[in-house]
Image 1 (cartoon, rainbow, N blue to C red):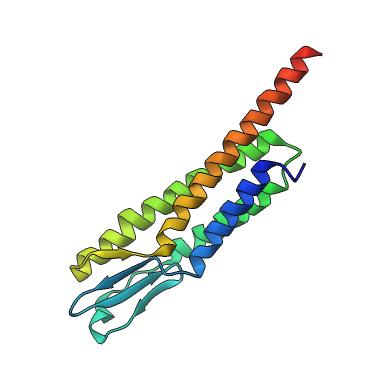
Image 2 (tube, rainbow, N blue to C red; image 1 turned 135 degrees about the horizontal axis):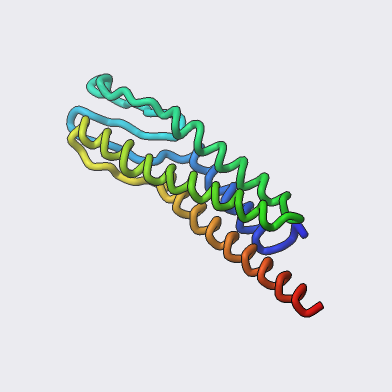
Length: 154
């Protein structure tokens, strides 16, 4: 059924990932640099920040794909095993997104600008969606155990 709790968790994960497009991820400020990192790219606010060129194409590919998978998974409620596999893949992609963001983009821009990142609201949405994926996975696995235990009683 589509009104199960895991459907709500998957919908909330989809919303959390989609919100990354509407909020900045991080700010980098110094005397020479004023840069804002978004999923769609870098917004430079000063002329000195012209030497910071970084492609946000991996973010632009992974974020909508995770949002699509989490929304698509809601409608796989009739096949829990497939739903679990898709959620595992979404979890993997979400972990890749978090690692790419925190260990590549933030470190690279901090190294170039010699500043520290000010994490903004958008930085926390992948972590929130990761939490919702884990909760959905646990709920689906719990349903699967319940179905298997009721089949044993027949």
